[in-house]
Amino acid sequence: MKSLLGRAAFKSSGILEIGSYEEVALEYYNAALHPTCADFRSASRIVLQRLFSRDAPQGRIADVGCGLSLLSEFVTENLVLIDASSKMLAQNSRNIEKRLVNVEERSFAQSEFDWVFGILADPYNSAQAWNNLSSALKVGGSCLFVVPSYRWASKFRSSVLEEQPGFAHFVKADNSSIFLPSIVYPQAEQFALIESVRMRVSNFEQIFVRELTNISSPKISKVLAADDPILDVYFTDKM
Ligand SMILES: C[S@@+](CC[C@H](N)C(=O)[O-])C[C@H]1O[C@@H](n2cnc3c(N)ncnc32)[C@H](O)[C@@H]1O
View 1: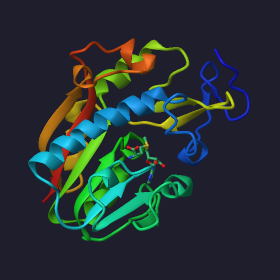
View 2: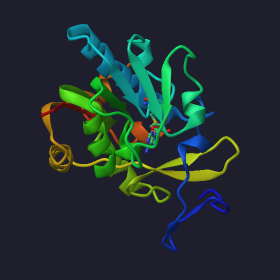
View 3: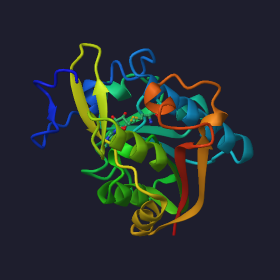
């Protein structure tokens, strides 16, 4: 096990020190350092390619927890980027409106958006954040919520000693290690969370390992087979 001193998690003693995305923002998109993030991003791109080819979202659109916005590869007009990390927001084009907001702590809009996207949204998959996602939508508006598959999260995080259920473990370029929140629910529990905030699930889809041309991350390839889902995708509407 790598040294976990400093900003560290001590699984054996039950102490878990939690980091923030600000600490990994500048290396998060380095595929050599973080192939798991890169594989999940490739799978998310498939979700967006499908959505935009069958039913391009219209109106005012928010990319919540945007990071380096994947959504901005598909739409730039009427798009607002929201993230709790200023270093993540800063990686995006200057021409797109940005809001520095922790969506678990405060609202980012009131009935403003036709579409809200949460792509790889497991860090803030909480009731507080869902309340704010719902409030930001117009009635009848839609939220696309994408998380690593429950199959992957449960299999991987229970099978590797350094991992913790409910957290993503990042070994950084300087070899230090941090844990970031990552909440992935089984389908029925996720449905219940969504329905608790005046939203309904209109569709549930998954992206499967076999749909990707390549999986670089052993964290994925060692626990999932070709026919296993890599992403869980929730299509939801505000009632
Ligand atoms: C797993 S990354 C995904 C980033 C991006 N959507 C993508 O697909 O590459 C999660 C993002 O959510 C942001 N984030 C985490 N917790 C957040 C919160 N409570 N409020 C707003 N953004 C948050 C992080 O800063 C990070 O940019």
